[in-house]
Amino acid sequence: MSHHDERTFVMVKPDGVQRGLVGEIIGRLEERGLKLAAAKFMQIDQDLAEQHYGEHEDKPFFDELVAFITSGPVMAMVWEGADATRQVRQMMGTTDPKEAQPGTIRGDLGLDLGQNVIHGSDHEDEGANEREIELFFDEDELVDYERADEPWVYEDA
Ligand code: DAT
Ligand code: MG
Image 1 (cartoon, helix red, strand yellow):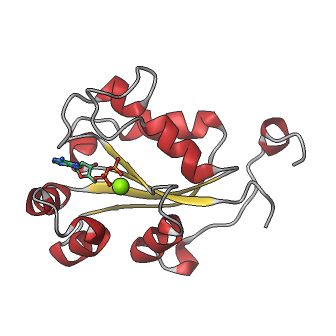
Image 2 (cartoon, rainbow, N blue to C red):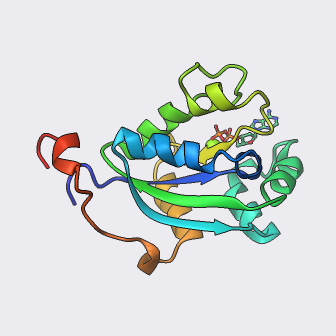
């Protein structure tokens, strides 16, 4: 694995799907130079939602969070690239879109903490990216390939 093979789990949440933002979000990640490694348009069931948000099970907003993420289809994806987990988090902006910087996905596309458009693995939570990828995808669903522009994104590609 080269240094630009880090993978992270990204999901357009039900509000983003309903608002027609899937293409916009995929476009931003693609244009950055990140590489799509897997994608699944799906409906999350209760069990998967509770596992995915397990770290929040004791929070007062847990039930609301699970209800929201199961309320409609999501676009679950794996994106790959240098420092991918942290870079996607920076592109997402802070959790509350009202505090997120303009230029970020949440800062440009959202206004409500409970409907903040996108999920991305937390780079401050060691191994969260791999855990979340495993929860949503089988190993054989991850596609390994070269993007034609890689030498123009990475100097050492
Ligand atoms: P992030 O999605 O930025 O990783 P998180 O993991 O702390 O944020 O929380 C998961 C989701 O839960 C978040 O995207 C929106 C919701 N959430 C977080 N804090 C909340 C709060 N205080 N009240 C209601 N919903 C909250
Ligand atoms: Mg989180």
